[in-house]
Length: 147
Length: 421
Ligand SMILES: Cc1ncc(COP(=O)(O)O)c(C=O)c1O
Image (tube, rainbow over all chains, first blue to last red; front, side, top):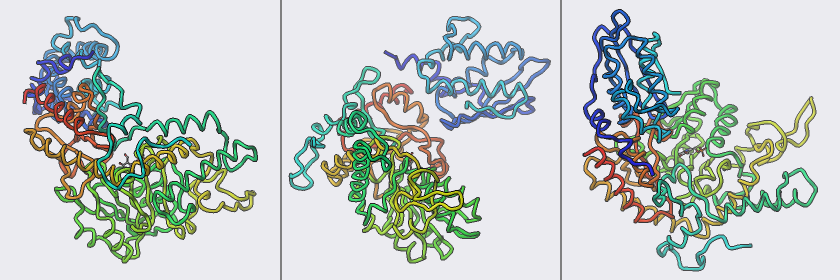
């Protein structure tokens, strides 16, 4: 039987209550909006890149605990990464939720707390929305949706 | 014929509903989800089906499946007979004058599209007005936007107040000789508001407008008499009335339907076709192109028999009791706010919890076996009106119990524990 605590882990509840990097970056070099039409979750992601390295990343918006915590955790794990590293992390995270990726992979770090989401198919889009927005921002697109 | 329900229909009016006994008519109510007994409180989305409806559909396929109105063989005649009997059952259910006024559709959505396209398309001229309300389901907004765009008509919207009631002064102000059609929900799916449709119809007729009522959320909860209401069109869906999906009804006043062009072309809706000229069939067939949902229609007939045997007034009274109990208990939950507090409500409890998104509520309730809907309920303008992205909505049917309402409240307490609020 599924355990609620697998989904709403302590870390997720905490990041939902006090999201990290919840702001807009002045002088951002890259921004994109993310929208999940099914839930109405909306977020705006902004980044500051220097020499291919993500120096700062932040988000604003409103959504469920899973989407807010996921965005908060994402900003923490992307800071200081190169664009190429960010892409690799996106793929690993995507596989964690959709294709049985390994939650013990050390590269995932804290992101592994979202592994429980894969048992809730209706919620996977919530967790992945911020990553789509991050990728859209890096690719120079203005917006991303989960559709 | 097997008896439709397990209660004595000769008993005196309005004693308490024998809910436990009636629940046994619904096989799915014994289901377990995530290891817990199912508490099904998503009846505004779709209702569960009694065994008599399931059996009627199965018997149709096992014993009489054939196409209708076109065969001379025994099965085709039998299928046609049962299909047309269902139409008579719907006529009686709505107290329409004639079966020519009962058109089978796929559901409320198709019924409204039919009226918008056929009536609206042939009657609306540039500058004419369509009056809807701020609490409509998308299916009573978008068809009107489409036809307004095609005809140059203008869509006007009656606003709602903080309780979720129509602001009737605004309705009367917006209604004018330019208003061609007024289209409003009989009962709101997002808020539960029961609208003052008698007043709306009287005023609209006085202004020379016709009235369509979206009865999707009303038909299963209160008796509907289209002659007493004096509405021009009434739409509802079978699946919200204990019948299968994919079958719905449009009631239309005969004189209006007569004057309207067909909605779709094809088989069944014609008398004679040549490449020079096609003669359309009589009502109601003019609006029923192609092979219809025969099994669903006969299933709807069985559902109506069931509902009438149980008794809509008693069902509605029980649902209002549940709503009152749920409202009282919900108000005692810290941080809970009810969205939709109209003085006249039916069977819907929409709510939000401080600092907790409705989707998290939905997931945790589901985990506890409690099925509700979360989201915008296909009524995004209502969410915008309240400045919310979504709400959680519990909606009751006559087979729900006080114990299930208590399970809902207990599950909401679990949500608060998970979020430590
Ligand atoms: C008020 C209202 N109108 C229209 C509809 C559309 O009904 P259907 O999807 O069965 O066509 C619904 C169903 O959700 C409803 O609640």
